[in-house]
Length: 270
Image (tube, rainbow, N blue to C red; front, side, top):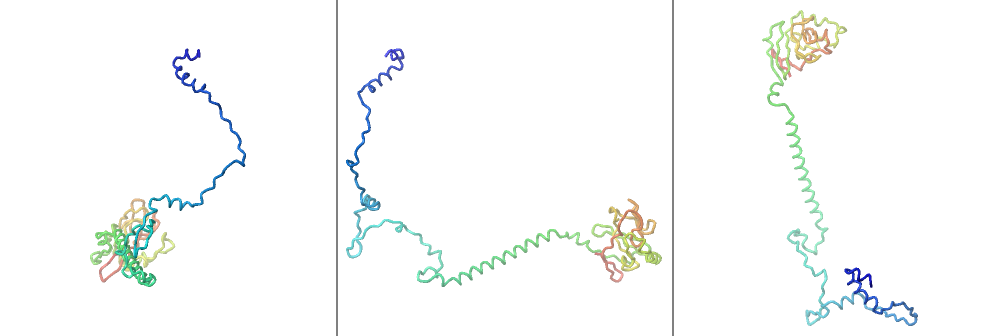
């Protein structure tokens, strides 16, 4: 008890526990019981359904129907109200006495009709989209206007070369003399870097039609100049003859001949 006096703040706890420890209680000991003296009560024979049914407060409810015949009230999921979808069903399918198989062909025909109409509409829409997309990449009206040009050959004097603009490129039209024609036809093909006869390049021997763009780096040659009397590119020293064929210099190919046709005294390029 000396420790209790010294620790004054713990004294109430020690005082409260002292009567509990010294109240005279004894520790209980387990005593074995013989098996012949054990009494086991049997389980009730009623089922769970019967037990729950007896616990329900509706056991005594009765409803009279017909000629005084007692009918038991039944509460089940079958008593839930089902929505009526008759307004959304077809008239031929609302009669329960008619089998659904009798209207299969009609439903199939309607399905095929809708699918066919949708396919046609989709194909037409796709065709319109593709047409507009391709048309957007076509040349503009101002470019198409220059796709072809007409040149009156009577206005080009003999021995002269005239420059026109065709599709954004210079177009050389040369009215050759009989001496130039004879000279170009006599050139052997073995001496040419890009072998082509004069007949292959000039549909009409009197006129030479070529695009005035050097095949080396795209410069514009000078007409009636060079070592061969045809065209000369001063940028890198390419010399062409009166048939537009490369004869000297770094250019690898002859001058390009555009598609052209002759109509009487009119030249149509393009």
